[in-house]
Amino acid sequence: MLSRNDVCWCGSGRKYKSCHMRYDERLLEFQSEGYVIPSQDRIKTPKEIEGMKKSAVITKGVLTYLEGKVIAGMTTQEIDDIVHIYTTERGGIPATLGYNGYPKSCCTSVNDVICHGIPGDYVLQEGDIVNIDVTTILDGYFSDSSRMFTVGEISEKAQKLITGAYNCMMKGIEAVKPFESIDVIGEVIDAYAKSQGYSVVRDLGGHGIGLAFHEDPHVNHYKNDYKGMIMVPGMTFTIEPMINEKDYETETLDDGWTVMTTDNGLSAQWEHTILVTEDGYEIIT
Ligand code: MF3
Ligand code: CO
Ligand code: CO
Image: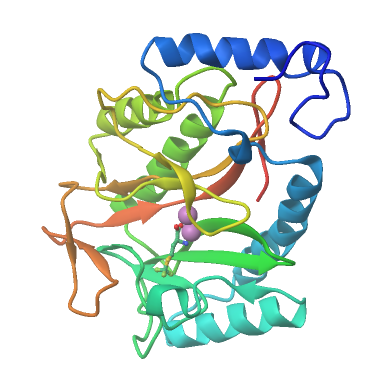
């Protein structure tokens, strides 16, 4: 336990009483109410946040670079090639490549694929919707983001799902506030998704990120009764709701990665890496 006049644990060099003392007291109150509180190493230093932001320049850069380039007749492997070249030319490493044996530099999830689609020989067709999910490591710092891409003319129901999923992500992001439970994110996403007639995937969620690909905490995108982790300034995690046109259930293919809907309904997803700030949030990606 630090006493009032000790130097704060956060590395600011300031006295504990004028730095994180009040903050720690508040967290202990939450803990006594049964909430999970973040350990000190969940709080990123200014240097670590800077590193993540530089990594994010590549992540958002490649997604923006892909806008307009995802067209009928191309393979998902060609998307992967673009991500690989763009990332490595800028000194980054695609975090997915070799991650638990995953073979490619991004994920390409088409139509009823919920996430973790593996780029390959599939030829994109007019009307397809594709989530491209990119994670970059730069100087050891991770950033993770995904967007939806459309191939030519798409159906009205597909466009509505894409927009609905984007709104779900943004509503989740806007719910980020220090000293609130992380579960408010799932609450607002679930409520909005339901209001649009959609379901929210439960088997996968967002995750802490920064010095590793997947850190604590897990971020649920659906309403639940857990008392989740309390959000505090300096925490970084992803919000990446997977929104299904029909049922939220998932099925993983024999390749060990590709996660699909079980009823062939469409699925859409958007993802940002978020920093909790003193008064809300900052989108890193
Ligand atoms: N980028 C994905 C996420 O948002 C994770 C992909 S892991 C992979 O968490 F191995 F499937 F690529
Ligand atoms: Co992620
Ligand atoms: Co991702």
